Image (cartoon, rainbow, N blue to C red; front, side, top):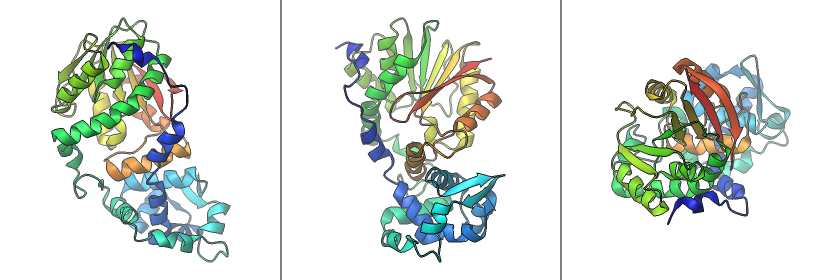
Length: 343
């Protein structure tokens, strides 16, 4: 097998199928806000800043940000001068005292395990899915070969489509060597070199994912073009000698301090004038949409230490790391990429 199959896109659009999976936890977060916090009844009488909302309900800032972004995207809240206000929709259908209040309709979800999980995540800030809210659980889980292989296979099948669309939208004609940081199975590197045959690519991954990546790359037919470099992106300096970096579907798993650190490492290792590509699901600068991205952010908040970041947040992080913003472009299935130049 060679990489030619990674230049053929499907005849149909899988976006609705992605959205069903990616938005699965959004209803549980909304239900927790309605039946556990009674957020909308309180906001009806107390338009508040984000800090005041967190203080009153004793919420951790990361999941609270995801909650309020979801509320904005659903048209339940708006922001003005940093203050959250209820919309008419929320006043009529989610606030106490309204004859059209739907809170009793959501009450049946109160004891749903996933809804209960949301309250724990909102209060603790720790992910629920891997290890009893242990902040190190995700990294530890990826050190188990069976978990790492299952997770990497899931990301591999997703990347077959997303990687092709990303590769088709990139102009890498002046670049020579790509480093795929935390590249998982290597599917994005394979898709990019399939489209840009002059490039060589290296996937930077820690054991045991590095060995899984090597096998996956061989299965795709990419071994001649894509190699694997073993290393820990959190602990080790990034390899040098590359004029383009790719961080695809990685930053959304981590909180802001880790995101900033990874961008700083990329800047330190990337050749001057080189480009950083950040491929992910991004919110708009106002953080009131797109709704599918806000819903996907709930899944990430629940199961990882991260969330979906907005274009405005990423622009700020990149600027602080020493990058120059170059472009933002949608790709497929509510994903997009940011292109930044190393200065």
